[in-house]
Length: 228
Length: 388
Image 1 (cartoon, rainbow over the protein chains, first blue to last red):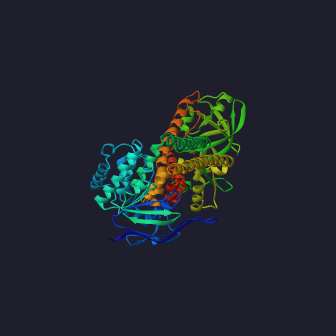
Image 2: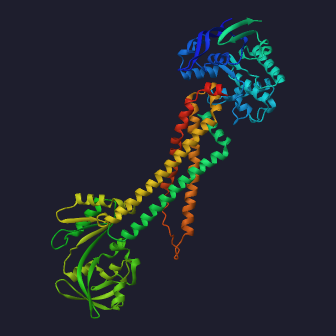
Image 3: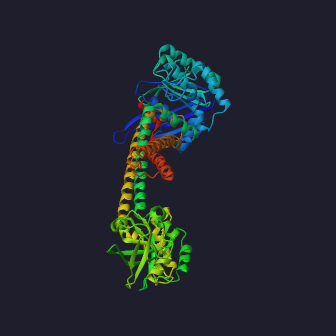
């Protein structure tokens, strides 16, 4: 199976006068269609790693390759295009735009990369809302939904452009256990249905064990990398 | 572009109270501009109208010792052809004389005019209070002050004593009131032919008086220069109202400059206010900008959101300002009136100036939004996501 994402000798150091090494010699790759979890204590560097994978942050040294393309040579504009078309993000906070409805939020990634929404895309957005169980609230303003509904909307939004990779940083961190279970089952369903590669950060080991691969980070280094 | 515009609209709608306050601020700034601009222009126009509206704005007279211009018909035609900004041309023959009536006497300026041409400049037909413009030989028009002082009536005979000591009897055909005391007691108006006959000048005149079109009043000196270049300078003297009214001119200039300064500083303060409020909204919307950038919106499109906010605020603020400004101006002209019903405050409402003020408001707002637009382009999504 080809690798969709590869990190080679990635290091990340913050600060200029007082330097803090957050990631040290990270070498990891992810196969297309895989479902991996990254676990670690607070401050271990897992979010930094995810942000570097998603081109939101740049490594101090090392390479990040998405679909074989080295991202360090790409301009800011090209990186933005790459994120728009190839990567979907789900964060602990939903980051829905409160000025728009749920459906409008889901359509946002397409509108960023294109001038107007086609009927086909409109249909896809509605299908995704149905997939995440929110067809009844799609015209609600983003603020008029429960936390679980907002996070599911964020997941639908991340899927709109049919990205190859979804990077999720503690997607259920703000939710109760029942919603958490629902969300994780949903993510697995999407992985099976669409073949989207998932890399999910979680601090909860029980959730991590639902994934096919567990990577553990301790003090900026990979200390565990097991397949189930 | 469409997305940036829609996001801008939604951002403004999401905090409607703040948006309306900004629009109100712009509106007040624009209305002050419009009101002050209209007021100053109106005052200037009425001042100019009362000072030189009914007098010669450019005068050509003879350099010759005799003070006379012969072959003036050719000169009149030349003047008319030289500059199209000249509206009215009136040949004049001026002579000093003594008035003798009822045992009293005084010096007078006897002015010989062609009736219809002089009427264009002096508005004589409206200013004749009794009788008519002199038509027959020996008829003259006197100022109302002389009527009172000498107890004269239409049809009475007076004597004019010329510089060469001839006494010429003249019949009063009517009285005029040119609204200036010295003119009402110092001028005697007659027809050009009568004046030429009284003073034995033959077919000559002493000056050509002119008025330019209303919109060209301030260009009278330019017109004079054009005439100077086109006509024979050796024989002729040129003057214009600006030379003759230097202190008025400097007063008007001072007024214009101070009005302009007020308007400029009002706009600057509006601009600074908007820039700072919009800069704050960038911070208020940083989460939204962060996720949009994470989803792949480019810096340019993100900045465009704030430029569109500036544009929308400028348009609505301009409309509000024009409405307030016009409303204020109209209510002043309707409610602040003198006893005779004329407005206390002379306002000149120029549609071009109003549209210009609105346009300046829009440009100022777009300019003000450059600062927040630049700020938003510097926002790094990773900083926002990490901090939240």
